[in-house]
Image (cartoon, rainbow, N blue to C red; front, side, top):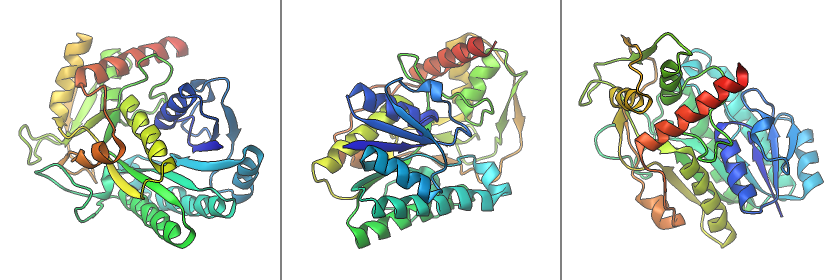
Length: 328
């Protein structure tokens, strides 16, 4: 039994690989290395460079290693980029996932864990978001992921696949052992950008919009430590192996922090009063997205261990400092 992790050399995928390898699992990674790095992975993990949209390539990897399970992370994830270039996102996230799923089915893969996003919910506010509310994505990124969810659900009904779809909220932090973190040089995540500003790697950072319907006018998000998120995937795999029913689950802590609050925490943790300018809103940014996380805890028995914004920021800061030294 072997597990194929697509996008396994990327930020979240590499943490899943580390968690699986730590548990003694046989792991195989496919990555095109557009945003991932093979040096993030343990030396005993098989890595194959290629595209998930290449059916022949994927078939060869599945057959070579006897793959029976798939964790699909490979995707483009930048909301503003999806707004300006939607076809790129539908091609990369949706069309290539269709090819991947079709190939996996033909090759006898039995279980799938899909990396989805809270962006499928759209512009929600108020109470924490339940998996049962009507989905209404406001960006091509969110739509591309929702379309992939639908494909997986339909394929499971037709072909008997077992799956768990995990809808991520805002992922941040780094491996507590310092083995992996957000390593792509073009930062798009708030905490990574803020710690780069604290390290002097950028002259300033920008806060996009202060007129949202939130307590301080800036966007509110539910920040989840990447190690807790990786554990949710490991728990999902165990759940499916034990005969669990197909499920769609939120991955978040159930409480949110505003952009200004995050910036203040980064300044406090790093002890650097870096410059944070106020700018206009970005297209596709909802005011508030906070997870209702009761279902994942009950279904998978998921017990997060790193639900602390200061810990998340400290881990991200330590990783960014390590990257800065590595790239010097």
